[in-house]
Image 1: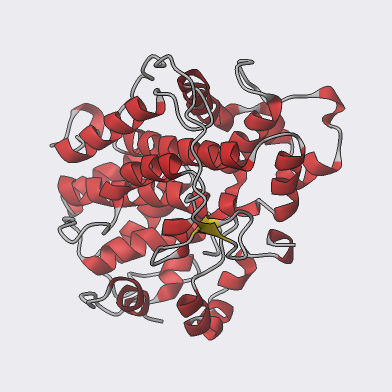
Image 2: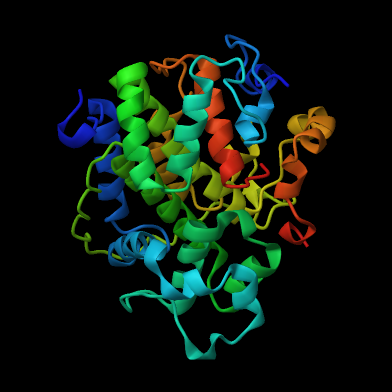
Length: 122
Length: 225
């Protein structure tokens, strides 16, 4: 499934390459059709889980293979989403209507519905 | 750009924004003093090693009386505030309406909760980035004396969330902290450099790479939104 869809919906212009959503949810392997996708997914998850020894190793790998600026930016994006997901979860906001309507089948197929147990809002 | 031990350097813009975030936290807020807000960051930093959090999850803490146990804390904040910070820091994907209601029932004002969320999440961004690039987290600034402003917005609506959201905004996440505009400003100042929040936002990664990192972190945190 294309990550491109969310880019188009949320931010207007579509400048991305189609990507496999399973690599983003951790259900898939490989690059997800994103350049250095496997590495970036691993780094993002290690940062999200605060596995600092693993992050240090990936940081060295990323610096060698992607470059320091790209690795720093990946960590910056991951850090931001480590914060903003907590705002979303702590305020109990629901998906935006256009996202909810457009992603029913996608959420079910990729296991995203399991992130919102009934107890979340009841 | 690579420092000793494989550490990376923060860009000037990011470093300035993150330092400004911590300095803003140290100032009196709308519903917490500067001292309290700095204590919230200390609580967030202490949360990973909290013995109670490692022994129990949020659901278990709601079901039991904890046999008198408390979260590891320095005694500055009320216990329910420490529960909120540690829950948000350590177990955000499992926060439930029942847990939120418990926090409010234990005496926390909704406005205070919104500000606590903003301070906690802002500090998570700053500290995650510092640790992620291999640096030490910034030292906390001294709290600035002064009284909270007790500011809240009346321009909010029920949007089927746990709290009212700002009436205006192009996405629920951008409206989420709208009950306390000062808190919303604080958080999005911290977040701004991490995503395409401005027309001139630029990254050395391409758009699909940025989206992949964002989505992978959201999934790792089991964030439905």
